[in-house]
Image (cartoon, rainbow, N blue to C red):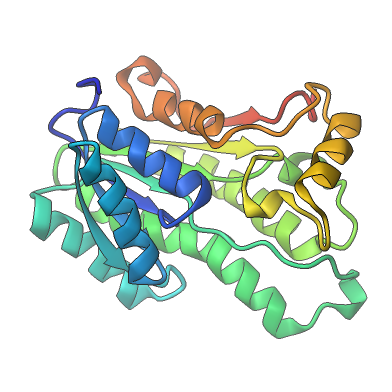
Length: 253
């Protein structure tokens, strides 16, 4: 435990698993009061339980980030329970089974862009609305290295959504830096979460594939991605605005 974020309230979407859970735990370990958000309450509550087991402070909120009403209520709940909102990690996201573009159905397209891109936009909209009235804050969005290189045939919707997050982050950062709000993004490569597996792969299959395609030779541990989020959220990154920090083991080098 450190006091890096002591006195801060940090909201993490997609906090019920993977990078989101690791992020929520990391903020709590550094002194923040965490609002763990997931589309279902149970996984968010489990993250809260893990935080409290370590002596941290947290509460769980269920919200669908594609719903403006849910997202507005998510922010309002964070503020009413804990007295403010200082940091947000907009991490909620979906992955999709590879499908050629011509075979992609419109409902799947809208669902994936709704969570990955519109969900980030809505989260920022309501987070910023509070932050600019209360002295500013920090936002870190979850993008992906795939938005830079696009080398995943069959993943048109996912690639488009993550490229969109990177672009949206830059524009929002310029819109709101004069409000005292720093906005950046982190773009991971393959990480040790369920999203790193292709259909039918075992862990050994995945590790062998990654070893042959990622320069560093392995997937990232969630803590390695979260370290980038933590840095961008900290005062150490006080002059970093509109940046997309790629953490992908050399894939985009």
